[in-house]
Length: 341
Image (tube, rainbow, N blue to C red; front, side, top):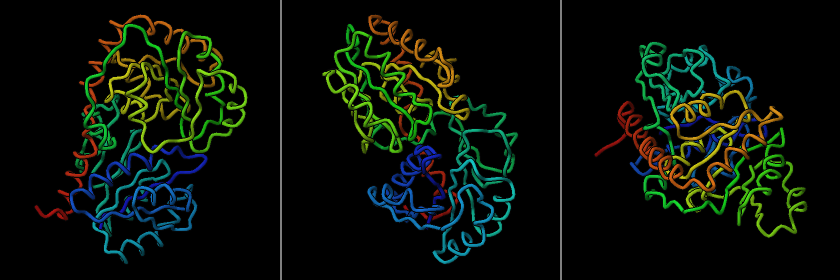
């Protein structure tokens, strides 16, 4: 049994659970038994939809050290061999306590504090392998975008067909949108020359009904709730406007030119890393009043420049190949010895 410790709710983006689901799918395809462990029942419906059991601890997701007694008891009960952890709420004491009873792996996309898991997964485009290995000298280190844990669907992306002129745009937010990013950005995008404007809003988005009513008479605008998989929509789009989370890696695997903005400080590494490599230009932080205008400006530059979009698309797919979850699963199974070939 391999257990995965992750949460999602109105304050925690869905990206943590979604990338863990990609790893869980890859583990299950290799014959491993996988179960999720959550503080509360917010993620349970999504996990069940994807065919995974979830054990609810009934604890405070903001105080993970307090869950250790009940967590360790549960792990012993199911005879778990490994715990994969994906949370910003952990600290060094949490790992030190757990390593006494089970092997641990940690998905770390902040790299601002050192812990002591058996395996560290730091797939960010901004991750410096040398720095990571210095931070985790006793851990197996998996670093860089080749380990981006994407859904298996992204392994099969064809080279992007670039149109002479971009005709449609896909606008994405995070799981929640407390600053109202979509409202501001959609207003700017409707002023650009697009035939189709597709908006996919996060599970916890508060402005959906308002925006549906606002744009009811604009035939170009389609506003959807979260969809099971984004690949089809990303591949169909000519340009994507996205928040700076793990979706940026999915966009790269599809080769769809994009513009990013950030919703939180923990997205800064992604947005600046992708911009630095010339892959996805960054419009700014959602709290910056000039960000929506900068986003519209960057998008406008891409609409008619098919050569630039074509060059970017090739670079994106060369950088992210969509096989990261498979690589992570193989590495996890190698330390648990649960995979019998």
